[in-house]
Length: 250
Image 1 (cartoon, rainbow, N blue to C red):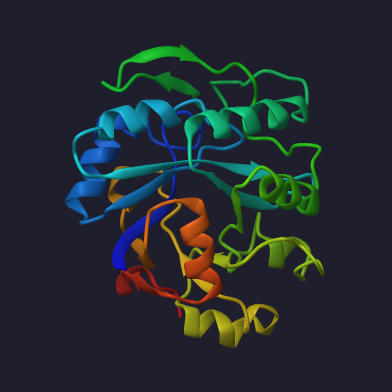
Image 2: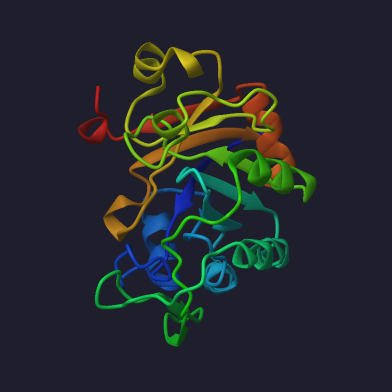
């Protein structure tokens, strides 16, 4: 097997809280400069720019997984990963059905840019993506698993929009195989949060700006780069977290 260095939580300019610099070619260039082999595109409640980043990465050697960061009705963020953009877009249809009515206010939240592989704007998503869906944490995790995807509770060590901050527990039977860290090292997280002490703990950058990409990386020992292989690596704890110590809050 081979070690693949991955950052599985990256936003594009479709997320209104991300910088407009987060275009497909710029993301690919930053990921390659950071020495990454795998990234995942995980915009808020949408997979609208996944295919463009995949196209921008074609021929570069960088593997781009399809994803989304869903905000549940409990205001918990869950990273949802799939092998293909088609699967992610099918999941997007379900998520969109559970978003509240209302349009994005660019003057308040920022634009939600749909982009092509060259980074040119092709449109703007009018739905407000920075909103909680009507789906609960267990519903999201269960449906993603049923669709053959991977669900990771995002940045569980943060004080907001996290499973531990908002619920205080991992619901029994919730079909997840690991937890994502956004601030702490695994050792520090296990000490601070006994609830997840026995869980596999991976890290990702949750990049909203180019300089964030690769700041928090996990090296996975994989026989192939796909969701099933990632699940096995997480279950067997065949990975190593690499963090920028300047940003590791201990």
